[in-house]
Each structure stands twice: as C-alpha cells, then as structure tokens.
Length: 451
Image 1 (cartoon, rainbow, N blue to C red):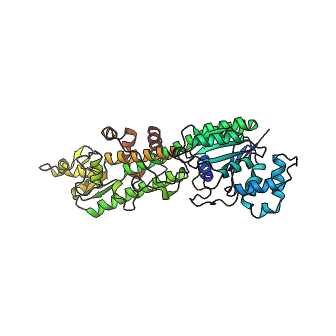
Image 2 (cartoon, rainbow, N blue to C red):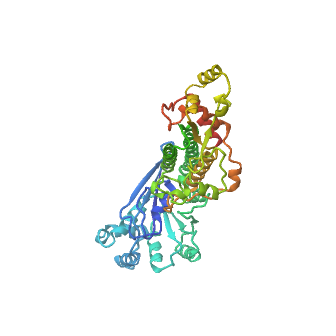
Image 3 (cartoon, helix red, strand yellow):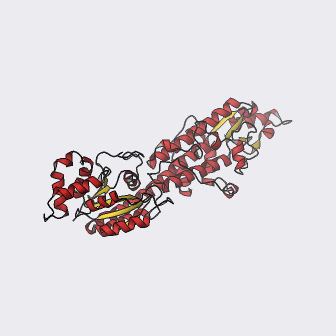
C-alpha cells in the first residue's frame, strides 16, 4: 500500500510551477517567483504530512530551457537500430557526460521524474505552441510515469488553449485540467486531486486524506480568524479615555491606539493565512503608515461611503467617539443637581465615585463610536473572506470588495459585544487589562460565533 505520494512539478521556465505549488500548499513564501527565466535552479521539495503516516511530497523542478538541443542529443546518442524503450534512453542519457554539463538542468528534471510517482506538467496557455514544447513533451513522455497536464493562466484573455490540447493529444497525454494558479476556481483544487487519483490509483486514499485535511485546515483557520477579529472588537469596544472635549492630544492618542490595534489584527490575519505583510494594499487595508484614504477616523472618507456618525461624534476632532455624558442613567447636567440640596450631591458623588468627579471637573468618557466599530468589523471580515479565497501565488496587493451602503444602514453592535462597554479591564488598550477574565473569554467566544 502506497504511503507517500511523490509528485514532480515540471515544465518550461517561467510557466508558473512555483506559483502552482504555493497555491496547492497554501504558502506564499515557498520557493522563488520572478519574471526572469531560470529562477528555480535546483529541485526543491516540500512534504505535506497526513494522518495514518501518509504524506504527499511535491518537487519543484528547474525549468526545461533547452529541449530542442536535448531532444537531438538523445536521438543521436543511440544507434537507429537500438532496441531501447523510453526509460532505457533516459537512463543512458543520465549516465552520459552531458547530463552533468550542457544539460545539467534538464538532467535534474528527468532524474526527479523517474524517482516520482507522477508528474504535473505546467503549461502557460498564453504561450504559442512552439517546436521546443513538442520536443519537451516528447522527452518527458519517455518516462513510465503518468503525466497530468495543468493549463495555467487561463484567466488571461490572450491564450492558446485549443492548440495546447491538440499538442498534448498528439504526444499521448490526455489527462488535462484547467487550473489557474493565481486565480483558481473554488473547486479547482479538488478537481486537480481527483484527476491525480485517476492517474495514480494506489494514491487515491492519500489524496482523499489530503482533501479532508484541506477542509479541516480551512475550517480551523476560519474559526481562529473569527476569534482574532472578535478579540479586537472587544478591545476597541471596551476602550475608553477620560478627557476634556477640547483636548486634541488626548483624542489623537486615542485614535492612534485604535489604529495600532487594527494594524496588529491585520498582521495576525496575514500570518494566520501565511501571506506576506508586503501584500498589504495602500488602497484597501487601513494600516497606520500615513494611508489616510482608508483610515478609520477620516471623516470625509466615512461620509463618502454613506456612514452617518452619531450625535456624540466629536466634531472636527475625528475621534469617532461616543461621549458618554450619562452615568448610571444620570446625565452630566442632572448629576450636577443645580438647585438641589448639598447632601443629595454628596450622595450622588459618593455613589459614582471617580467617574462622577471626572465629569464635575469638565472631563468626559470618550469611547469609540458604534459605527466606527461596525466599520472596523466589516473591514476585518472582508479581509478574512478575501484571504480565505486568495491564492498564495497572487503577489498583487490585497484588495477588499467595496462595502455596500446597506451594510451601514444595518450596522448595529450585537448585544454580546455591547456588554464590553461595561468592563474597561477587558481592553488591552486600557491599563490593568485582565485578558484571561472568564467573562471576557466568553464574550469573545460569543462575538466570534456571531461573525
């Protein structure tokens, strides 16, 4: 019974072999991707461990750069009447001096194919079908290994798919699948592995095992992402500062704390999905590097999206803060009890303690406005959804879909999140944070489930 499936990913230089692997193994850091030919110079492998001591090993091979000369060399290497099959011819070529010299790159590829269970031949369908590709496929088909042809970059309008399918059929390769490494379809990966299972029947259990694990990984990452986002929302909701309304320094400091907290969660999500932080988009992700067009506290940007702030929004200061002038149901005005007995005032002050004294001294409790938290939550959810469906071969900046105005009209904080307003020690942005508070953890769990 087969316990390890070895797959050689082969093809001409710059057809997207490494990009395909990044997509299949969900790791944007694997190998090197460049527009320059010959980026991959050596065989690189990565092992995907599975249950029941099974595994899949992918081998990223160098590009076949000189197939025309290699085809002629192999044909002239043996007498015309020599009764040698394809494997014999490839084996003798590997033993020849040129396998270590002029055709060193090609020899690495052929050697890996012979040591694998199957090959994945990657094709850039944008390329015209040239003679070098015919010779390349003729050489590879000499092995006794099954070959699955992957038509890459099918999302591009300029392609020669029909011509490529014709060439593959002439060579005798009929297992073909359309799979764009950068923009794969939702079921593309499943179809690819099912095609491999038909070619390598003993590997069916391994491939089914891997497909199950993919589903588990996807579900686990989604749940972890929801928890990360939920904890951020609790942090921001429970965050407050006591400050005077005209204290712009305090307001700016509060804004920056929230921005930094948002940056942290973005970095955590990118890391969770194994994407590089350099793929942050200046247009779509907020961040704190002077990218004010998507800033949480840019009033003009919020208005342009139809976001209506509450009356408690600090005018001109763009803090997005609900000014809590009411404590325990008493507004600041009524708490001063103008005309009331001094005894009553003292009892009220004693009951509300430091918070009331702050109010009586001209301070107010500033907390982040509900609509800003809704804005933050929607952005983070859109980011999560984007990363869930994003290919790891995609090197373009992460872009989020536009938010619909109806999202804002329904933007109300759920009760399970609103409760965080009452517990300032739940926020890591406040002093004296109690991260392991059981009620805090329970609230984060509830918010995560609602996400």
